[in-house]
Length: 285
Image (cartoon, rainbow, N blue to C red):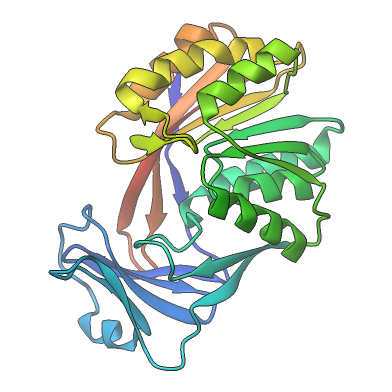
């Protein structure tokens, strides 16, 4: 196993402009956003620039909320290469994209371009950036998420990116239940991406706890992989585990092949500072 950290440096539609004092200042398309981030224990480098933010996520006595300048739309679009995603201020501090995963989007898109006929399963797929990137690369994608609202956004993002509504099979279901159904049907894939939360609920109230459910799910992965399997990516956030832990979990169920792991982060623009945002482990064959 080899440690390889992946750091996003930004592109035309995204930059991490500054961070510090528990916040991060990011450019998403035409808009500058001020959001909380517990990792930024240091002080801001350019405090004056923060006044230019058009939206700020704030904690309040009656609950968290977005404070948005007058005239700023609640929803807008954001691009990466040929992929277009809609972002919005409707849900908590998250706006519909995790830009630090752009290295994985590139990996999936390139793999699809190089190898025809690949099938990808995206579990806990959120708003579908990885699914759309893979589909744009030519993969046949099955996208699974428990949120009906999120699944609808995936369909809309696919169309915005020039794909047909049928290009991604979108499923609203509890992940463990659906994986077991796929196995019973004998469906297999060459690429699997997992982005599990620390805690979540399925559409019928099913409970997901990463400390209880992740190992069970990973033990099913070998049955989902075809004989021509190429890649499994496991992502993680604030669950308190290390990247090496995720790598060991993958190695236990996929003993052959190659595993790399590491931190996922974002480089602060015009700075040597890097903001860690999560972890990953990846199996390739």
